[in-house]
Amino acid sequence: MRILFRICSMLSLAALISCSSSGQPARTETLASSAPIATTEQTPPAEVSEATGQQVGIVQPLVTTIPKTKLIKNLTYTGGEKKLTIQGQEYPSAFVEIDLHPYGFYIPDTMQEFVYEDGSEIGLNKSEFIAMSEVDRLVHPDNPHESLKFGGEILFQDKDLMQYEEYIGSAGDGGGGTRVDGFVLKHDNTPDMLLYFLYFNRNKEKVLPVFLEVARNIKYIEQKPGS
Image (cartoon, rainbow, N blue to C red; front, top):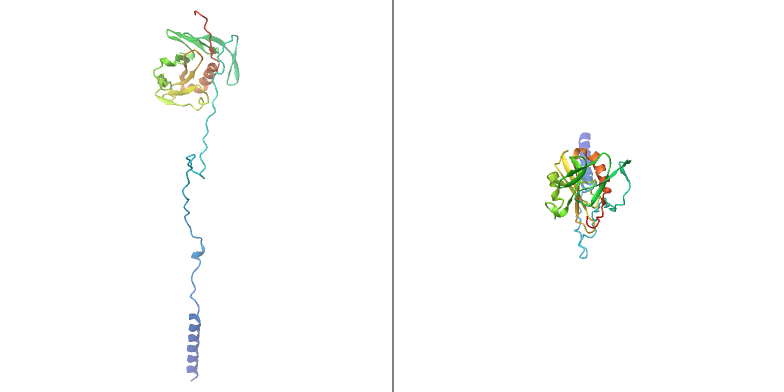
C-alpha cells in the first residue's frame, strides 16, 4: 500500500512538472545571430555637371606637368673667354665657329672640331659629337623627332631632358649603343635649326653633362654684309 502511494505521488509530480514546462516558450539559440550581418551598400551613381562635363563629388586625379626651362638663354656672342661648368667643376674653353651655319660653341679642351665637306661638328671623337642641320632639310621637316631615327629606330622621351623647352625627343637602339638627342633652336631671321647630340648610350653619364653645357653656351655669329 505504501509503495503504491509513492508511485502515485511520483506520477503526480511528473505531470505537474510537464504542465509547468509547457507554459513557457521554448528557448532559442542566439549566439549565431549576435554577429553583425554583412550588407553591401550601393554607391549612388555620380552626377555629371552640365557646365564642366565632370562628375560631381568625385575627386579628379591631380595632373602634374614638368616645368619647362630654356636650355639656351642667350645667343648673343660678345667675344672674350668663358669658363664652362661641368658637374660642378669649371673648365677653360675655346670658341669654335662651325662651318656653313652662323653659330659657334665654347668647347673644353677634351673636344675638338671635325671639318667635313658638308659642314663641321664638334665632339669628343668622331663617334660622339654635337652637330646642326636646318629643320627644312630634314627627312621629315614636319616631324623633327621622326628624323632622329638615324641614331636608332626606337623613338623616346628622356626624362632628364624633358625639362628643356628646346628638346624634341631622342632615338636609340634600346641598349648601350648609339643614341641621338634632338633640340630645335629658333633665332630671328634665320631658319629653325636642329641641334643634336650623337653618342653611345652606355656613356650617357659622362657625355651628356658635357654636351649640355656646351650647347647651353652656343652663340649666334652676326653676319657682316657681303660675307
